[in-house]
Amino acid sequence: MDSVKDIFKIGVGPSSSHTMGPRRAAQTFLTKAPQAAKFRVTLYGSLAATGKGHLTDKAILDVLGAERTEILWEPNTFLQFHPNGMKFEGLTANGTTFTDWEVYSIGGGFLSEGQGQTRTTVVPYP
Image (cartoon, rainbow, N blue to C red; front, side):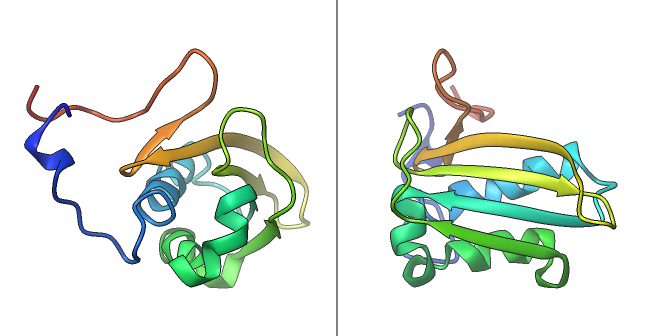
């Protein structure tokens, strides 16, 4: 535990790895691709298998906008690094991908981009 804030967190659903992590990932991707006309988010493995019940889609759509975001569910595909994998794509108005980002929700609302990088967060109180 890095901070007292690691103990208590409030999210939109019952699982931090299925709501807080994907929401944080959507916020990060939005800052990376603010010019995107549309978004496509592919959820893999565990996120896809239980995401509807855990409100993973709601967490993402609240950030990126339901009217311009397509969510694809791939429950039988597991990415190598972690079972909670996501791929975010920024699309042009005609649907061409111009940027993408693969990221993993590793629990507690923390994110990882895979091997060699454990999580992306700022520790408020070391």
